[in-house]
Structure formats: C-alpha cells, structure tokens
Image (cartoon, rainbow, N blue to C red; front, side, top):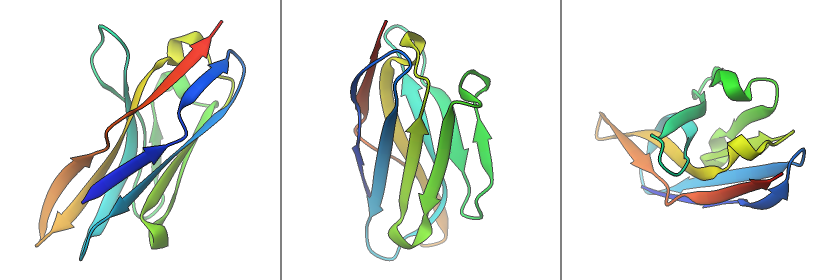
Amino acid sequence: VQLVESGGGLVQAGGSLRLSCAASGSSISINTMGWYRQAPGKQRESVATITSGGRTNYADSVKGRFTISRDNAKNTVYLQMNSLKPDDTAVYYCNADAYINFVLIPYWGQGTQVTVSS
C-alpha cells in the first residue's frame, strides 16, 4: 500500500490549505484513515481521523477549523484546514489502516510540510 500526499505549503495566519492523500495497492480494504502532525521537537500527534463509515474524530486544537473527509471509491482522504495558526506549523502525515489478508496494518505517507507564518 502506498500513500501519496499533496497540498502542503506556506500560508499566512488565517489562511487555508487542503491536504489530500491517495492510497493505492491491489486488493486493499481501507478501514480508518487520518492525519497526524509532528512539529520540531514535539511528538507526532493525531489531528483528525475518519472511519470507512464516515465517523470523525478531531484533536481539540483543530475542532471548528479543520474538516476531514474521504472518498472511499478513490481510497482518498482530505483535510481542509481553515483559520490556520502558526501553531499548526508541522509536517503532516497521512495514515491508513488497511486489511491485508485479514490482518489490519497501519501505513504512513511520506509527510507534507505545512508552514503558517504570523
């Protein structure tokens, strides 16, 4: 399974960005997908997750500003980020839990940099 992310970049505080992550691979069944982030000197943290049924979960720090969505037919997950703050600066990683031969395995993208200037 390969996860390919796109959409990161540099934006001013208050601006918006949309991240995308497409999963590819043969005979895969994706369960939960999500976005995590890691700022310099900090641990990786969960930003938002979404199940195959559409149930979402957000970190308190992004509630009301970020929206996660997915297209199951395309095995793609999106993260719409509005009202960005300098504290949102981090490398954002896509995650997908996929069933491979009935075993649930986590996969990670390569990461995309999001920088919010003040």
